[in-house]
Length: 71
Image (cartoon, rainbow, N blue to C red):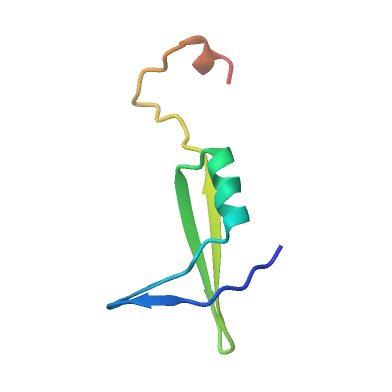
């Protein structure tokens, strides 16, 4: 699915608006991590956004120890 949006400039910063449908999807997914990949060539700059739920940090103690054993 491709979306088009115009950048919005406020003072010295430029922002890309998130369409309502995408914002609702992210809210439902409870996404906490966003990564952006850039692909730049002579014609364009492509930004690929990936949203994911956080991965359990192994340094933390899980609330249910059987979750670690289930992997």
